[in-house]
Image (cartoon, rainbow, N blue to C red):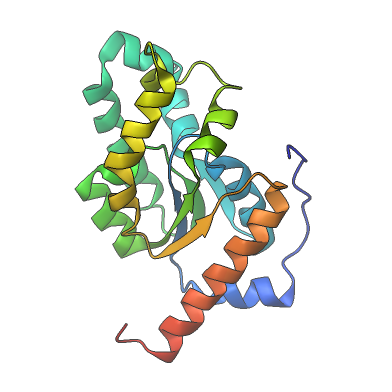
Length: 201
């Protein structure tokens, strides 16, 4: 599952997909543990685009980990920082593949910006899949509760209706990242071809 991405020049299919983006970025949204960073890195390599991880950019700018920011500054400060970082990344003048944090897409301003500058892809994962993955990284700030599974379930109930507004939805399963990547490429290609065939959509 944790195989390293292999760098190679985009094939003809990927070149067509990248060209159809017409300068827009691909923005991965979804819950913590959905695989946004792992799949995003591979997608960027496939399409010949740069990859950015919003959480990593926030940590580098603040010189603190996400957990440290939550502990010292609070979630409201973090969300404002997150919103500004994503706005900067999507305003760089060239398309990228961007992995966002789990709460980023909940911000209406961020959703509008993503809609204007990119194609949003929701990596949707079921609760049991997410729990198996997040247990491997016990530092998630929002899961520092007495019952992490109940907390994650509540987050799913709140966030999934908003994630469903994304342009494309792909199921993130417990399979190799490259298998999910193939699903993402196919779904992205289908979305872009549909848009080309029917610009009004």
